[in-house]
Length: 244
Ligand code: COA
Image 1 (cartoon, rainbow, N blue to C red):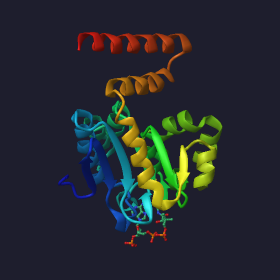
Image 2: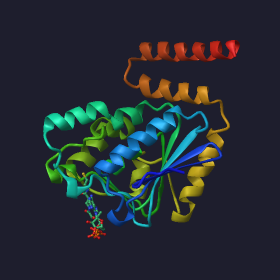
Image 3: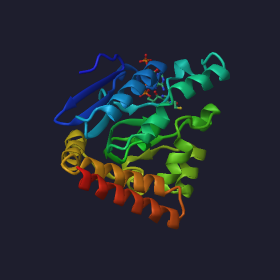
Image 4: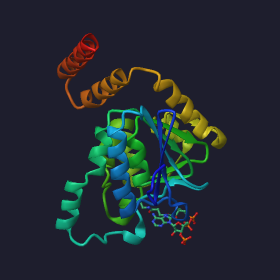
């Protein structure tokens, strides 16, 4: 069990559970959540007992309603904000984790809520989930990698449509756009995520992590480089078995 305040971190049967826990504010992402998430992500990365992780939101109404608007643009100065980001790059850390990450999404999934989901590998949504990127209306651009992760997941045309118009998307359209992998009844959300986690955790952790790296890193390479990456990871995997 964790001792954090706005995130609950639990471990059960080799599955890590990260719950965004500010239900009174629809789990809006604030500075404290950023700091706690950074610690939790480092623990996930380093803990050999955690093989797969599920991210979810506390309460009935939201996974996460985006950045906390009461802290909006309150960073002391761009210089300090940049320094904090350099020292504590939550999103870089999130995307560098090679373990499989599953997002269980319900209710409002807005702004950084979408971006947290996009840092995960598999996204399951309940029928009541609604997605949106309100950044344009606030005069900002996504700050948690969304301008890069969204087009990589849904393609450039839907990403531009979603980001530039700020229109909201219901669960079924999110599934059609491949923003989420599947949509289930609200009561089936966590059980579905757990079924996936329980299946994945049985596989060889190194093979899973190399497959994830081959796909994610390969997307930024040309085909020839991508095939080379795949071959390298494949031989490293075999070599580690022969040594072990
Ligand atoms: N930051 C801080 N607090 C937030 C929040 C956010 N992003 N989103 C919701 N909350 C708080 C509300 O202030 C409210 O607190 P209160 O009960 O103390 O007044 C509580 O969460 C419930 O939200 P409320 O607005 O009353 O619910 P609603 O059903 O009427 O509307 C939303 C839900 C999501 C449509 C609305 O809260 C909203 O638009 N939130 C902001 C979304 C946003 O722009 N996020 C930033 C993305 S970059």
